[in-house]
Amino acid sequence: MDSDMNAYSEAATRSDHEAPSSSSEIIRHLRLDFRGYEYNVSLDDKVKRALMSDGFNPVIRGQAAPAAGAGLVVDIAVSVVSGIAADLIIGAIKILIRKIGKAANEAGSSEFSLCRATIETDECDFIITANASAGVSARGVDYNGLISQMMVFRETEAASGNAVYSIEAPCDVSIDRESFTITANGVGSYSLWLVTYRNGDRWPSCIYDAANNAFLPTSGRISDKRILPITDMYYQKSD
Image (tube, rainbow, N blue to C red):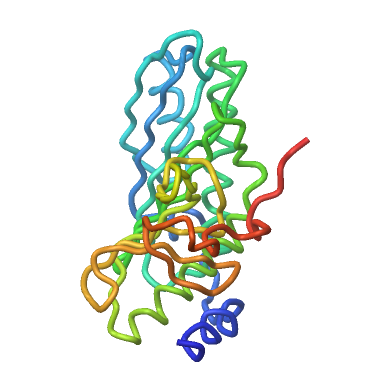
């Protein structure tokens, strides 16, 4: 187990990929889901036209929400070319978010934020959520460091015979008397990951504590105090 954990840390910064020249060479498919009380169907066309100029033909859906909720949030799902480094993927997504935000502003939205980002690869899905309604801002998430480490984790697990289906963060610990449950619901620690497996010894799922290089069950007795990282390596609360 220790050798596996060392491998996760040591390989985290390795990258030997050549940089594609544009976002459209990194992202094969793009899907956007809007929701919020500021959502209007006219936004779909404005966003599509803004992105088609860069070679994208996104699938766009939207849903209005009660005024008590968020102004406008977007879930973004990208299918990426195999073998692309995390920083290039995140860079491409940030470019998309800026363009979407500009189109949303032109459509009259006063609030816009990223909620759920799903990066789909041939091997695994990486899912990062920032629940703005719960005070979690996507601006505070270290997407580069988080996705990079997740990719290394997936590779190391695969080499050990544990094929990963998806990795999702953050995870939250819910305590009820003498037991605990860890779930992925957009709040909690980005150093706690819900890992779902295709097969292998850890199938069907477990929690990986990236801060302490430890595997945890999704639920158990509270006597297991080793259930929450002291610090979150991938999130810094915005002022």
